[in-house]
Structure formats: structure tokens, C-alpha cells
View 1 (cartoon, chains in turn red, cyan):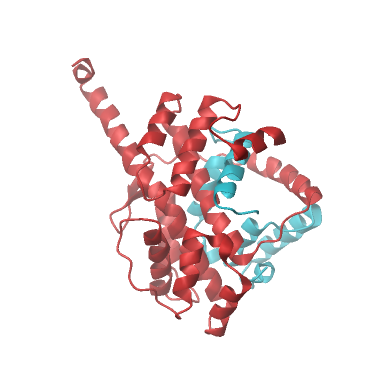
View 2: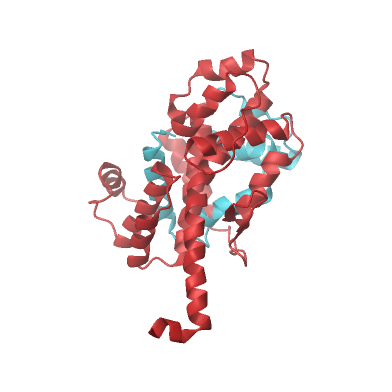
Length: 242
Length: 81
């Protein structure tokens, strides 16, 4: 993408010279990132008015989840920044790899998880596995990390007390709301409390998962509601005439 | 990096070879790839399937659009990565 166009979007996405379809998608990404706990009624209406089909909205939700997850992990662990040359080589590799990835959408795009919350099917499977599989940390610790970050962003779900050392709660708060403020001392405090690097990794990805899920969980019920209306209209065409 | 994600002991040999190749070509292994492979048993294949919906060839968004959305979200999160 043209770097000037990217800068224009970062400066003011509402007035940047971009297609309305893309602006509507950015609006939804903004809602899922900034106000993840609120159902994004307005942003979704704008997407529909701009002609975005449901598949595009679901793909946008995937992008929002992806980067809300990885941004938090990147800040927590302080990923090294690639140089410009490395970035170009990486883009070339990703072009080749992503052009090979063709993922068919699942037949049923979402389903209720074990906790009764609607999520995309793949995401629910990934969440359940990440929280329940055998690992260095206990499932209870990962579950509480995931629930803590989700609840901090407004997710309406039960959050058991954080299972782990006292320094874990403040760490997860930062991870959830402003991961860019995590500093070396935060991770060192977890290590000093006896958590290994593997354990810190596990609670961090569980926490990032919880935080990144919130926006998607707010969006999916609205999409399901739209789908039900469309199905009802298809089953009873006269309804659309009334 | 605060956690040594480069040297995960649970990566199977094919994965280690893949990372070696990326390091040779690019000059570093990007953090997201290290994250998804550091403790691979934690990451269900459906996670990779879900996150590639938005950036893969089947996405309704072009590569450039997906990059713009990712830059936008990273900026909202004040994440410089």
C-alpha cells in the first residue's frame, strides 16, 4: 500500500482519501479495538451501508482479533523491530506464503462455547484448547488470566480471582488495557515470584487471547441476529412485503 | 526480547528447520511466528486457520488492505511492532 495513504489513515481515517468500503472496515476495526465490550451497532450499520457483505465483515473480525492478540504479545515480550531490509524480505516471503493459504469458511461460522458465549467456531476451539490442554501452568491459571483480561475490557463473563503470584494481576491489567506500558520490571517480577519463561509465555498468550476475543464476542451476536432476520425473510418472503 | 522465544525446546525438527530457513532468508524470525511456535502444543491448528482468514488468499480484503488495517489497529494499540 502507498505509504502516504497509510499515513493519511493513521493521521485521520475518517477523512483519508480511501474507498468507503475500506473506511467502513476501519470503523469496525476501531470499534472492536477501542470499545471492544460495546456491541458495534453503528460501525456495523456503516459497513452494511457501504455494501460490505457478511464474509468481508467476518474477515475483518479475524484481522481485528489477530492484531489485538499479537500486539499485546509483542508489547509484553518486546519483539525486536525488523530493519527496513528485513521487512522487505519478510513481505516477499509472506506474499508467497499467504498466496498459498486458502481457508474455506466453516459451514457454521459460529457456535456457543462451553461458557455459552457465541464465537467463531475455530476461535472457540483454539480458546478451549489453549486454556484446557496440558502445559506448564494449570488450566485454572490460564482460565483466570483469560477471564481477567476479557473482563477488564468489558466482557460480560465471570472472572475468578487471578490464580498465581500477586504480581500477575497488575501484569494482566497492563496486558489488557495498555500493553505498551509493560516494562522489563513487570516480567522480572513474575520471574522473581517463581514463574518460568514457559509459564509467563502461557499466561501471556492466554491473557492476550481473552483481551482480543472481547470485540469479536460483541460483534458475533449482531451478525447472528442479522442472519436470523435474513433466514426468516427467505422462509417467509411475504414478511419483507409487509 | 524479554522471553527467549527463539529457543523453545518443544519445537519439532521440521519446525526448527523452517525457522532456520526464515532466519537465513529474512535475517530474523518475526515475533508472531516465534509466538505461534514457541509452545506449539498450546496453539490449536484452528487458531492459525482463523487468523489466516483475514490475511490469506481467500480473504475478501486485498493484501494491501489487510496491511493497512493491521497498521491501523497497531497504531490504535500504540504498538510499534
